[in-house]
Image 1 (cartoon, rainbow, N blue to C red):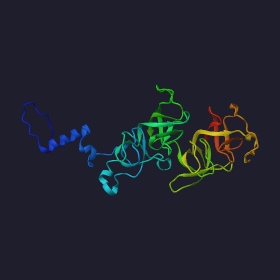
Image 2: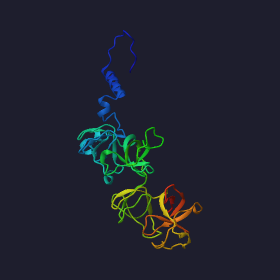
Image 3: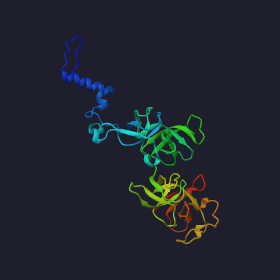
Image 4: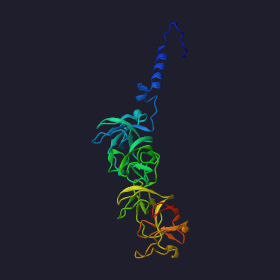
Amino acid sequence: MFSHVQQGQDFLPKAGDWNAMIDAARAYRGKGPDILSSSQNNAPQNTIALIKNNTAAAVSRGQVLGLGVPLLTPDNNLPEFKTRLTFNGEAPTFEDHCGKYAVMLTSVSVGEIGRGCVAGVCPVQLYVTDELNADYADVDTALGSQGLMASASGSAAVLWREGLAASPSPSPSPGSWQWAIIRIGTTAGIRVKNIGAEDAPAHSVLWITDIDENGILQAQKPEHPYLKPLVITSQAIAKDVVGYAHRSGIHLVRCEDWGSSSLPSGSPSPSPSASPSPTLTEDMFPFQAICQVDSFNIRRHLGDGNFLVWKKSTTEPLVFAELIQ
């Protein structure tokens, strides 16, 4: 039983009481061995992990490492595995580390261990190529550990960045590095692999044909106006590459009006020699749309369609459409 001691009073604490007070003081200050290594009194932080830099170069604060296997596993140290989050850090690639990375909170040399944010809010180096499509971010193979690539999709939401109009800093030009604040763990879409013969642009339509052993959807350019199921790409996806796409909801999508409102339901797309209307006028909205055969775009249609198109965007030929399959 603890009690206060008066000034001048003889004080001879019991060993158990004294040790308990020391443990409590260490825990409060966060400096003692109880905080760092005790498997009995400590629970793991779920947003910060210890990351070993296994790449060939030092990584600075705000840069990234891909997450490999844990340093502490149930086989080699079960008590510590349950109380400390640790990973081997790798050079990030989109194929292997999409949504599986740490933003380093400390600079870490080759072979050294540092603290990294694996979930939650943190500052990061962000590479921006398109100011209009930079609301999300993820790793990029070409960037490696330098930082994250900004795009219209990704596993992290961009809460703030230097290029925003509200920023007090000068607006950087596209294709530049910017400091940003992100929230890791906000995924914009599902993972899709483009197995077609052509690169798919952002905001295009792909036809889902299969799913692989890792749960990644296999998709390609549509071959029929009424194909299902479909996805809308939220980023450009090169052939044989995995990217993000949407299976439901309202999103930007590429749309052309081929005069198809005059076509009866079930008709194929017009021939390539047909001339598309140059623009979609406001009096057309809302309207239904279907796939455009051998194209990544959708087209306006009189009958039932896979898309409900609500309005134009500020960028041609993108519209806001709802996937209603």
